[in-house]
Image (tube, rainbow, N blue to C red; front, side):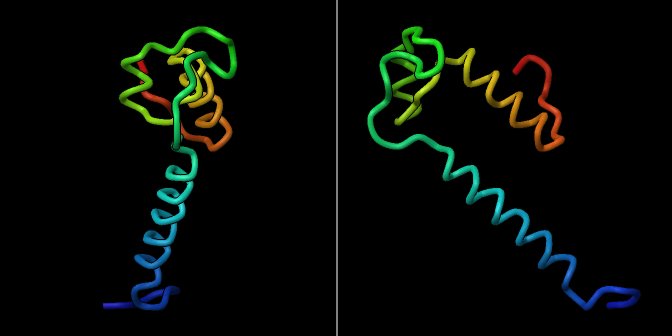
Length: 83
């Protein structure tokens, strides 16, 4: 039953659009192609297990965590402790 200020289904459409946008953004940030052997940020070696697990990886764990934390701060999202 619809009521109030919103057209029936509009809230769900808005949520779906927001989720689709977030998925597109996440996919665009995923690496593709050959992984780097050394971090693009600090130059430290990237372990082979990480390179195999994440095709196209470009950063070491430490630099990726820092980038994730910075992105979370800029979007207003909180990162879980211990990440």
